[in-house]
Image 1 (cartoon, rainbow, N blue to C red):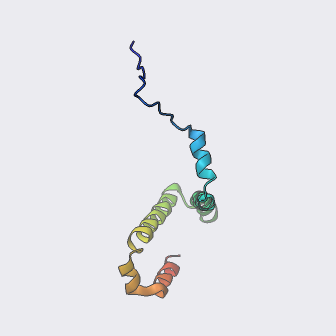
Image 2: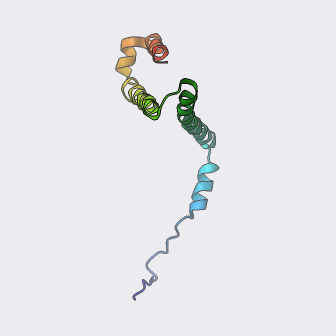
Length: 106
């Protein structure tokens, strides 16, 4: 088995430890933003999980109907984040128009 030996011309590199990288990120000025992203992600995950339990309990939906609800929520997220966020569409309908579209979808 051969081993790699460093000569005097090869600089020795130190890889930062994973904990050091995490600490540098957590203690950076972006900490409030990272905390906000974590809270929002946690809230959306809980919402998506609880909406299925709610409709099963309140409206006696079965698993196929809950799956359709999740599919529609996913489609709406794709449309809102991907298609409706463009400047041309905003200029076409304006802020009030998009607020009306949001109220209709709720």
